[in-house]
Length: 72
Image (cartoon, rainbow, N blue to C red; front, side, top):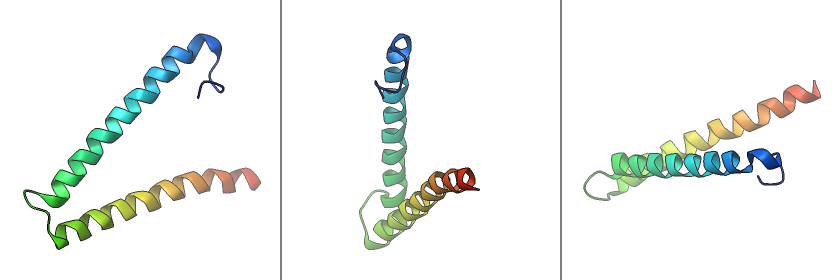
């Protein structure tokens, strides 16, 4: 991040990076809370695994599609 950002924007880049980390942590905590509820059960863990798998697949597609478009 520090190598990619211009010198005059390193502070802004760092702040945005930390903000995205905090947002991700809060969303992950909310997802675990919704998936598991008050008590951790097998079904809650399976739901959580499915949701994480879907999110991972979407992120993978979002990363690969631009690469395929550059080659075309």
